[in-house]
Image (cartoon, rainbow, N blue to C red):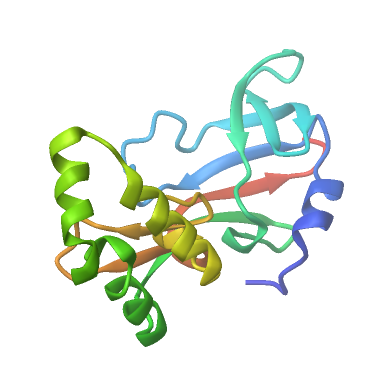
Length: 172
C-alpha cells in the first residue's frame, strides 16, 4: 500500500470521467456491483454518482462518510465502518449517575412510567450535555449500544472493519 493522502486531496483528485471498480466488500460478499467498472458521472461534496455508462448523467450515489473512516492512496479508496469501543471509566461513572437512576428520583421515574411523561428523559439529556457526553443520550456522531451484553460505544472517530475497497482508474 502506498502512502496515504488526505481526504481533501481525494475529493480534488477524482474527477468526472474517472472510474472506480469495487474490488472488495467483506460485509456484502455477493454485492451486485463487485468487479464492475463504474464512472464518476457527477460530483457532490459528500460523494459521487457512479454509472457503468461514462456518458450518463445519473447513477448510484457513493456516500463518503467521515474522513477518518476513509483511506486514499491515489490507487485505492478504502471505506471503513465506525469503530466500537468499551465505555471509559469516566463514561461509566457518568452513565451510572444519570438522574433517571438516582434513588431520589424513583418517585418521578414511577410517575413518568405510569403517566407516559418524559421529565427524567430530558433531565438525563441535559445531564449528559453538561458532562460533554451527549452521545450517551441519543446523539448522532457516536452512540451508546444499549443492546450489547457489555455496553459499548459506536464511535465515528474510530476506524472499524473494512466495508468497501475501490480501485481507481484516472481518465478511464
